[in-house]
Image (cartoon, rainbow, N blue to C red; front, top):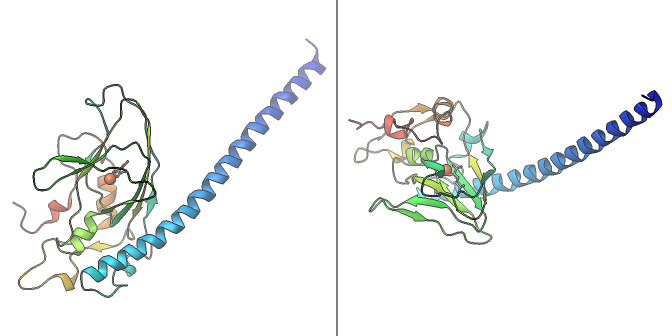
Length: 228
Ligand SMILES: O=C(O)CCC(=O)C(=O)O
Ligand SMILES: [Fe+2]
């Protein structure tokens, strides 16, 4: 064993390790920067959508802004590998988005299904290039006292193609108490929900959101005043 040769081998290994971790770091930094820029653009869009929703409810355009001071907004990067038996597996189990708004980017593979209210059928959301799918979440359903509805959806997998999607979940601060807005409540249409704390609701929900459950996860229906 030649200590000099060993030393230079170790040096080469060390250099390779440095190169690998350096390029990994560069990749992570580039990815981080792209995501930060994306998040900024999404936030701008989310506030515009929030204003449109407020207007559609006859409210001041900035009526809902205050709830988003200490946002718990996040982005998820979803990868659904191909599955040889798509009938036996789901990419994401049925659920409703718990937050205020979801701005979903999906590639051209398709797999998002929305439950049609009239007959309970699952309907595929056809991917449209250069466009987003906007989900109204549970919070807007509650704020609007059921004028808006959070749609149930799921993701089916594809037998041949992998699929990518990137939802931006626009959520209020964890201290926010969610309840029907006073402007949405009247003698003819009393508040349909009791107030709940968003932070507690979300931490309970996210622990089991995407598993196939025998029992229903926490839902806004549990806060309905007319629940059985
Ligand atoms: O991948 C999708 O199209 C939707 C994913 C989804 O519903 C979610 O992450 O909440
Ligand atoms: Fe979702």
